[in-house]
Image (cartoon, rainbow over all chains, first blue to last red; front, side, top):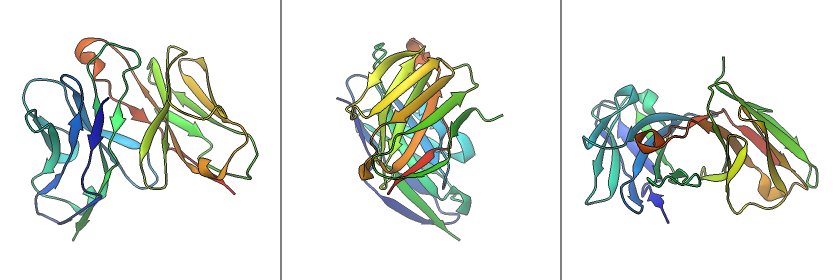
Length: 116
Length: 117
């Protein structure tokens, strides 16, 4: 069964500093990997995804994520944090089977707090 | 125009009542989902429909019944509401496909906050 773990409930970073939000996954074969962001009282918004190819994926709002197959990780990063990045971030995984029952599984979420 | 719209946004009701949440998407997607987000923000899939066919049905009480009249709509009806049903329910849609296009991105609605008293 596939699963995804976000080991940190909360990450606190000063504005202008680099940030990392961690994600590890477990899935049979090669995964599709995603990051979504949720602002207060809003639905989740897509940030970026890994399909294949370059292990460094660039996404919206200056975020990027690095796929590491040996460590089964897909950490979200940004070189310089903004206060407006404060939100709840979800990592998600989906296997590559062609079954219509294949589904996207979300991690438990990490609350990112950027202090001015 | 809102891509995925849910109504109502807020729903407060008594235990034992029956309620429905409606969802519509105007993206032309062929797959729709219901997710439940609990008070700890954990997001769990409940149901998924592809072209009006139920394809994912997680371990959800029979009191929850999804209905998809067409591929642009997915409604959720809940019978005999219980305190534990209080949560935010998110509708989402995507376009399925094979190969790399199978890395389908979900587009979420803004959520429907259900409070059972």
